Image (tube, rainbow, N blue to C red; front, side, top):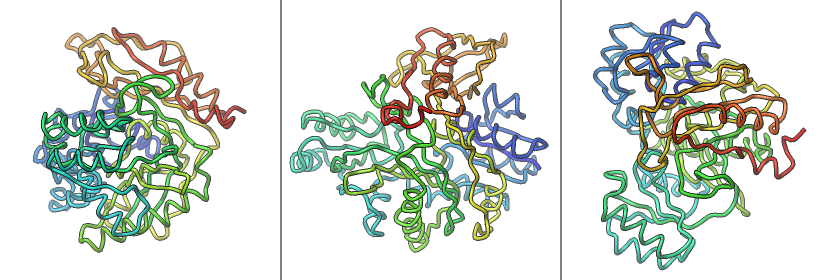
Length: 428
């Protein structure tokens, strides 16, 4: 079987790693891939957002399946073009990807479908947005409506901070087109969870929950990032909560999207808040999340390739067996570049530990120099995943190995999973 994987980050490396485990004979091509994916298959210098280039590559190679990793090519309609060419593709259409690419669309759809979520209003005028900030009071949430690489959500603890966020998005154009429309949303309290579900548009195969760590600093301090680490499973997400998420979040959302004429197929990611009054959706993503994917997939004991292929071929998951999971814990520690989540330096030589440290190192932002040296090439450089019988051991192994990665200005957190360990879960 020949598979084309679109993307070149840590999520795509984790997908490539898992799919090759599912089928060791798999012929893997990646566009554009990265140095670690190149060890699992062949990388082609085609950008993930070069829609015609990706389609031409898929057609020339006569691939059996295209798996689209990042959201940008989904927003550009890559799956639509591939389907027009008769090439099976895993991922939503451009219209369905709006569940992530337009927070306004997602919020209106959730409220109309009765999916539990925070109340919010959408604005393109800064003065009107600030008036809503004043009405709601602080704390309050200001969100860029479009894709902003995980950084377009400001949880403002003061009114001044909220108004500054409105100005940054609507007046200073800090997030470009993604911030041309903003949501002012009521603040929710509770812990956040990431829950993925494979779907054919109607039926759902949920995955175990993970918890992401968005803040740059230990103890969840400092600015938001795309994610500094994740762990799975999460004790506050037992099977009963997953079942509730399927019935109250995934199924009504999928039904609403079918009724809206944009059925969603692929991987739907619900970011949940466990509030004092129950679960509420913070946001949806239209693809695998990063770095949660690097923590979840090493725990998946059953095939990922089989349901992906079923979905991409337009077939039903109605008779699919539930996913099977290893009775273990995983912790992923992200090693980020100097300056992240702001402007970062690229081209720093990377030294990886040569000793066996019981981890898998996923490449998120790396490149090879002309002389073969491995170098930094992004904000989040590596994702170091440890799997162990307990969360405490997985955290220790992951942090230890990540600490042995060396490059100038390296940043990492050593406390991934701290809430779970504070609860006393995962310690034995």
